[in-house]
Image 1 (spheres, rainbow, N blue to C red):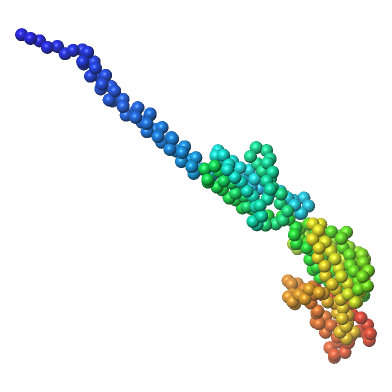
Image 2 (cartoon, rainbow, N blue to C red):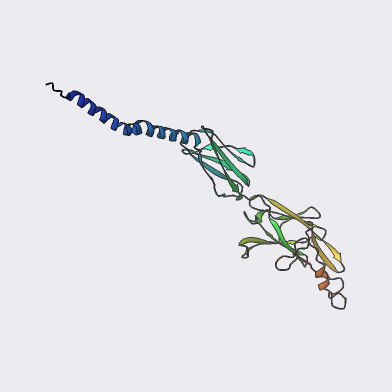
Length: 279
C-alpha cells in the first residue's frame, strides 16, 4: 500500500502566496493611489494658484501727496507686477520682504496687478480721495458802509490766511482789514471771515488753501436808485439754501424792495447808499 504525504515546502509556499495576495491592496493604496492624488493636487495648486495682494493707501500730512504700499504673498514666483492710476503706470520701490511702495500725487483709482509665473494674475483697486485738489469756496458776501465782508471755507486742507489778498480797479494789491477764523459746527469745518475796503469799480479777491489750490472772485457794484447793489462774477442762479438765503453772486432785488416804504417812497434819505447782502 502506498502512502502520500503533503510536502511542507509546497504547503508553506502556498501560504506565502496567500499572504502576498491579501497584502496587495494596502500596498496599492500606499504606493500608487495616494502618491497619484498628492502629485495631482500639488500640480493643480501650482497651475491655478493666484498671488495674494494687499494694497494700502497711507494718510497724507500735507494733502499734496501720499504713498501706497503693496504687499505680495505667494508661493509661486512672480512674473510681473504693475501699479497704475487712471491708466498711468507708477514707479514701484522695493521695500522690506515682498512689499513695494508707490508715490500718490493725485486723487483717482489706484490699480495693482501681479502675475505669477504660472500665468495666473490678481488685480485689486483702491480709491484715493484724501488729497486736496479742490480750491476754497466763497460762501457769502456782504457790503456795508463801504466794507466788503466775505465768508470762505475749504473742506480738506483749510484756507491759508497768509495767502489772502485783493486787487482793486487801479491794480493796487490790498491786504484784508481783518481775517477771523470761525468754527462751523453744522458740518464740523472751519470757515474764515474776511473784510476788505470795497472798491466800487471792482475788487478782485484771491484765496488759497494750504495745498496751494487757488480761488478768485471779482466783486463790483452798480446803482439801483440810491442803492449800491453788490454783484459777483460767478453768475450763479438764485437757489436759496436751507436757511432761505440767496447764493453768492445773485443780485437780490428783494433787498432793494425791502428798503423801500410801503407807499413806494424810498425809506432812506436822498443820496444815501444802502448796503446789499449777497448770500
